[in-house]
Image 1 (cartoon, rainbow, N blue to C red):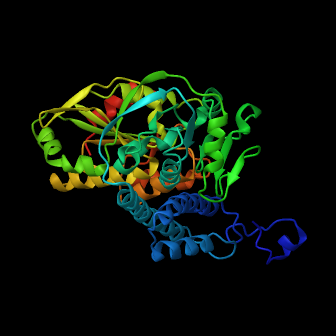
Image 2 (cartoon, one colour):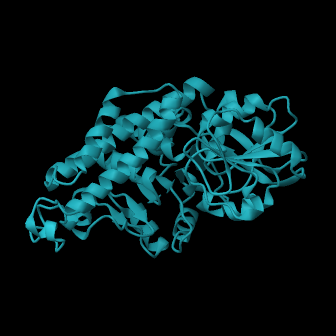
Image 3 (cartoon, rainbow, N blue to C red):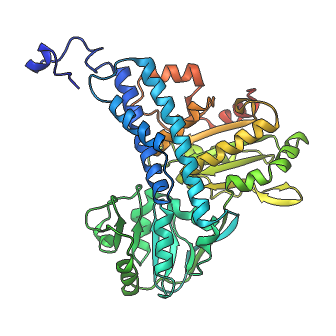
Amino acid sequence: MFCNQCEQASKGTGCVNIGICGKDPDIQSLQETLLYGLKGMAAYAHHARRLGMIDEEVDAFMEEGLFATMTNVNFDLDSHIELILECGRKNLRVMEMLDEGHVRRFGKPSPTTVYEGTKAGPGILVTGHDMVDLGDLLEQSKDSGVNVYTHGEMLPAFMYPELRQYPHLVGHFGGGWQKQRVEFKEFTGPVLATTNCVQIPPREYADRMFTTRVTAVPGGRRLKTNDFSEVIACAKQCPALIDRKAGESTIGFHHSVLLDAAGHIVDAVKEGRLRHFFVIGGCDGAEAGRNYFTEFARLTPKDSLVLTLGCGKYRIRENDYGTFRLNGSSVPRLLDMGQCNNAYGAIQVAVALAKAFNCSVNDLPLTIVLSWFEQKAVAVLLTLLALGVKGIRVGPAAPAFVSPNVMKVLQEKYDLGRIGTDPVADMRAALNRTR
């Protein structure tokens, strides 16, 4: 990142004026953080645009943010932090647009029970995040005799009435994206990957791997339009699946569902029956240390509710958390709110509760523990920081692009920290913490 405007750079020997030429580690850290946040926000904005949701101010900020990361344009730490927080605020708007677009197109979400496993007959497995792709595939395949299954972050499709109205959307197969190479081998039909979180396929299933638009993998077939006739034809030619039920799950606790029940939730807190709220989710990965989230979730007390979203849910959903009595009915203690972009919904629930109790979000009995892996997780984290949310714990490792000095600032201003190594001690601290 030499500035090419000094004698040292022209000689290839480097520049002694490192604070000006862009080699300052803190400036570089902030620029990389902004870039990752912009990438995540762009992914969400792309999905929103496909649903007809556009905001010119968001588009203008993306241009401004990218321009600010160029060499020799900005060397000021405070202005970089300001840009990063503005990225978080704009990402909130993008998630709001995406949420609104989904509801407009596919109907108001509601809880539903989802069959997990396979059913006899040909099938297509859809992974990724794009509900428009899934909707178009369902419409095109509705009279084909081919069943459709969700995978990974597509599971929340079942909470939308306009998608689950298709009887051949028969269930969900598999878990998080990091298990694709095992699970896609087991699934005998074609796999349609609609967005990021796709792995390069081995030869065992590369010839039945399809991707859409910019998503592409070696050996697979990239579809440039939403004509899914090739995928449907492939499903008919592949070996049929068999009846094999793995279980059931209840999903669809969209923020509108929880806000409809907000009065009852507030009453439960005031009555002392509901002691704490946990948000445990995010973007998952495969490296060691992520079993922390599993153990931490298992330790949540019975008088608490656990909100989860993103592919991080697959770390915690296998445990039986029991139910909680709310307005005379039993609801799962583990409330699946949807995809990673549905972090917007968790924010809306927290804001509504804070308003009901006449306090700030930081004063709520709320603990946020997030797994992070890629750019969308960065964008969501920046949104939470921009809203002034404190005490968030992320992990398992600290982001490599955050310098020690930048992390120190985040710790001092927002009490941002890494997850610990002892979930029992961390749970005790969370329940005893006075915000």
